[in-house]
Image (cartoon, rainbow, N blue to C red; front, side, top):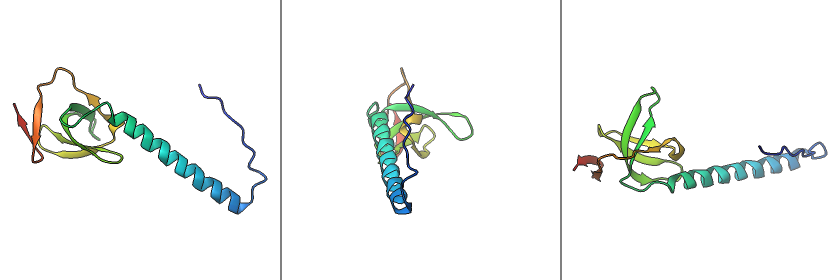
Length: 107
């Protein structure tokens, strides 16, 4: 459990609060980027993964490439998705498949 730190901002004027807000937003974006990068590091192109679709279905896919914040995957039905890496799960004991020109070719 993280300790909550009290920070007194009551003495700051509007310009100082705006500058503080900008620094906070930049820091949060950097932390989010680091978290996404760490999540991506557990995968590699060609890896078999699964994720939940917006409808709640489990989707099997193969990683094609890494983007700045997402991972591009191609599903077994040939659909291309950009998925946040923390939503992906590695698929163990799956038959490897290769991605050729954005289409899956099963071995």
